[in-house]
Amino acid sequence: MFYYFDPMYLIFAIPAFLISIFAQIKVQAAFSKYSKMRSFSGLTGAEVAKSILWANGIYDVKVEYVPGLLTDHYDPRFKVLRLSSGVFDSNSIAAIGVAAHEAGHAIQHYERYPWLSLRSAMVPVVNIGSNLAFPLILIGLLFRNGDIFINLGILLFCLAVLFTLITLPVEVNASKRAIQALKLAGVVMPSEEEGVKKVLRAAAMTYVAAVAVAILQLLYYLSLVQRRRDD
Image (cartoon, rainbow, N blue to C red; front, top):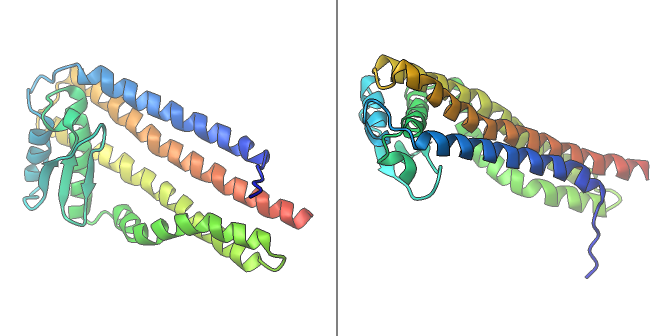
């Protein structure tokens, strides 16, 4: 079978790769540094998450352990806050920051934060659309009258890009809630607050990188379409 490699792809793929790697290095470096610093409170990530939830009147969210590194997340479908091994039973500055951030998502869900609600509603469509986008564009490029497939594929991928954009305010807001909750609960000392913020800012970089990568991919798809029209 003959395979065609598009050199133009590298123009978009290389910056996307470098942005992703940079974001991963930043978050891993910050987490590694502050994972070695014990918090003054001595509370574990799981204990911090529970205390924040209870302080906000949330008693129906479970806090569970999940395997992996930085696999922490809040699942609104089952009201479960899952913390990784480096967070669940750790009392480091990094652990309490990550745990508080995930608790922030649970608070968003409890308060029906509109951006989180919109993101959650988009998940099924985006999951399908992101998988179908490129095949549809490819089918459209293979046929002379395939514009309808191309346009549909680009529309679906635009929804995926929109999803990454909507994710940004959700994550930033969760981090703000985390800092406020930790300060109100007296869990972090003033000297520890900057460390928590650095961990959360580094984590936010991964979402900024996701936006940049999605936009670069969309631009590549648009370049394919433009070259088809120029031929």
